[in-house]
Amino acid sequence: MIKTRRKHWFIAWFGIIFILCMASGVQAQAASDQDEIIKYCLYLGQTVQLPEIPEGKWVADNEKVVRISEKGVVSALQAGKATVSIRTEKETSVYCKIEVRANEILSALSFNDKSYPPHAIGAGTFQIKVAAFEGLQCQWSSENTKVAKVGKNGMITPVGAGKTYILVAVTDSYGGTYRYRIPVQIINPHFEEKKMNLAKGCQTTLLLLDTTGGQAGYSSSNASIVSIQTYNAYGVTLKAHKEGTAVVTAMVDGMTTTCTVTVTNPKLKVKYGFYQTKKGLQVKVTGTNSHSVKRWSSGNSKIATVSQKGNVRTKKKGSTVIFCNVDGKVLKYYLAVSTKKAVKAMRYGYKRIGKAHYSQARRMSKKLFDCSSFVYRCYRAAGKYLVRKTSWAPVAAEIAKYYVGKGKYVKASGKYNPDKLRPGDLICFGGKKARRNGRYKRIYHIAMYIGNGKTMESSSTYNNVVIRDRDIFKKSDVPVVARP
Image (cartoon, rainbow, N blue to C red):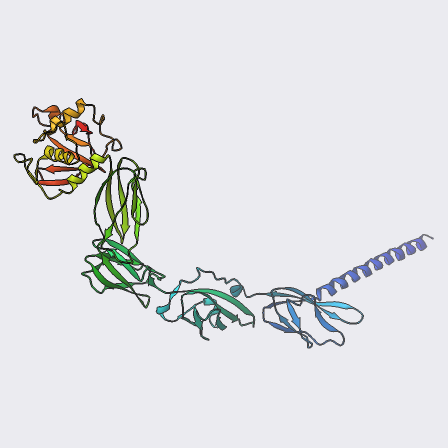
């Protein structure tokens, strides 16, 4: 009985073990079936031949990645993954998985506007050299043949200034084709101006545009009119010597470009003007031509304004400079705005600039002045007598003392405020630093202020009536500024 039970127990366990072994065998077979799915790795352009099948047809789940012909030839079209199956009337079973890769070198290439330097029209043909293209089949074309043409060998011929793209289709050893747009800039080196004016004695830099920065050579057709001072690959500095015309030539990047330079001699017909408020005048410039461009401005629009035609309008008492920038030269018109009598006095004195001599002994004679007789006679011509009506002008110290006593003077501490001075004021030189001369505040010289830091005076130093640029007036040097 015991033996029978043992026998049955053994048979039962043997059956269980058999069943487990059979199940394990099925799993192993399934795993084996899974391992039989073929994997392919192709590069763009590569092909693989699939075996003939008795029935059904080959299909791919991603036709953008691979294409399968009726004869089972798989062509790699685009980087990616695809699954190839056998499709019959009853079922579709997976046969293989395919991964398509791009050429690692060619797919990594990219080009932008800075990939290659610009090329000049006159520099001849050139070639875009890409190491990855060497030994491979390349087909070249140009998007714009008016800018650049390209031959079958990739040689580019510049045609016109501008930007275009050179198109190239590159086929690698696997048969994959990679397409690129390579930007190309074609430049035309030239001077920024074909014609220009330059005022006599002035310098200017004539820029060379659209250049590759290559070595440049320059020349002037007449160095006595326009000479070359300095130059580099991007321009040339010119100097105008005398009136006339010269042609400046640049040779760069296989190109020749020219600029015709005309030397003018612009001048103000009158450099100083003396007017009352709310008056109109026109500042005239000579020595220019039809190509001269005048740009006008006022140093102080509160005193006077100016239009771009040189029309000036005075506004209030004071002084300013009217600027005219023409042909590289800045002309300055010094404008004084004051009272009616001060204006007449300044105009009288201005007509005698450089036309009279200095003399104390004959200070009241025609075309002869000393400093005090000059200012006295200027105001006398305007209908005003300084100090008193007399045939013999008072001296500088007497004039200063008289107007201080009348309270007609400009107050100051360390130095005189230019905005407080008025054209027509009388500047009396002397002070504590001056040599003792027994006169009021040691005053030894007198001049007429005409604005903009300048005086008009009869000078013993220059032996004539002159305009002097004094700029700043210190109280220690000018103890009195009288205002008649």
